[in-house]
Amino acid sequence: MTDGIAETSFQWTGEGDPKSYDVLWNPLLKTLGALSDTVPKRIFDLGSGNGITAEMLSRHGWDVTGVEPSEDGLAFARKRAPQCRFEAGSAYEDLAARFGQFPVVMSFEVIEHCYYVNHFARTFLDLIEPGGIGILTTPFHGYWKNLALALTNHFDAHFTSTTDGGHIKFFSRKTLARLLNDAGCTKMQFSTVGRIPPLAMSHYVVCKK
Image (tube, rainbow, N blue to C red; front, side):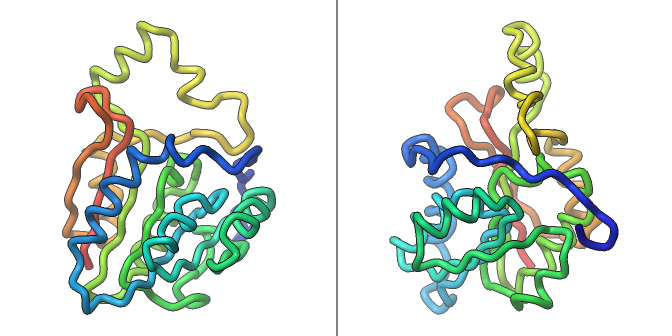
C-alpha cells in the first residue's frame, strides 16, 4: 500500500519459457542496439515479474535494477538472475527518489494489471533521465482483434478473469498515447509486435525524454 493505494499483485507460478518471450525481446534488443555506445548500459525494469527479461538483458551486458510487488515473482527473479538487483516495490511509489533515474526504463506487460494507470505513467516517466528512453508494452486492442476474441469466445482467457492480479485495463493506441501525453510525454513512437498487425499481441511504445 502506498498513499492509500492497495492492489493485489499478480501470482507467479513458474519461471517461464524463454521461447515465449521472443516476440517482445526481438524489438527490445533492436531498440537497445540502436542506442549510442556512449549510453551507460543501465536499465530499470518496472514490474520485473519472474526476472526472465532481466536475466536475458544481463547476458547482453546490461546492469539491471528491477522492482516487483509480488513476493513469489521476486523469489523466482532472485533465483534466476542473482547478478541483477531486484527489490520489492511498485509504480505507486516514488521510485525515482528511491533508485534515481536511468538512461533506459522498461515495463513489459504490466500496466494492464494496474488500476491507477495515471500514477503508473507518471512513475514510469519520472524514472527516465533527461535524454533517456522508456520502453512500454501492453496487450494490443483494436477492432479486428476484439472481434476475433469475441467470435472465438476467448475474452475470458484473454482477460485472465480468474487470476489474482490479472488483466484489468486494455488500451488502444489512442488511449495509451493520451495517457502518456497527460503524464508529460510528448515524444512517442508506436509499433506493434506479433505476426499479423490487425491481431497483434502487444503495443510497443518508445518514449523519449
